[in-house]
Length: 214
Image (cartoon, rainbow, N blue to C red; front, side, top):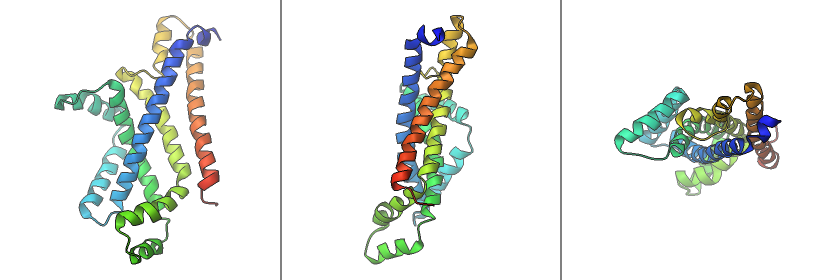
């Protein structure tokens, strides 16, 4: 216990850093995921192409490489931001590709007649998607989206290698101070477990309330 009690503030900063990364990147991933899913099913060829390219590139790019591209590439174009914000961009954009595919699979479960009925009532594509299709699609993909955000929380550990305060990075400080490395990682693992179980519980409640009965 002394590893935790002697360094509670260090663990606390790392834990809060990981929570902030997870929350902000999740919000960005959900927003972009919804947008790209809309593009992928849009009747406009240019939007469909953009959404497909976004998903194809990001799903097939290693996350570490994306971190390098964002943190080292964007400043070359004059975009200088705090490292934490760069990390949120990298994590959020990367995860949005998986959110998009989860939502698209949910959209495909909605009967085609739903969209046709909405269009027969004079609703536009945007109105049909936002008011008819996506609400039904989201009910069927609550669990996959939750699993994707749990993966995001664990992927946030990569940010520590780029000078971003997060939970895994605390092991370097404690190792330099001579603390037992095994117990250092035990408490780090417990911190990640708290975060992932919280996300899992939240989506479990959402699934019980809004999910599709199977």
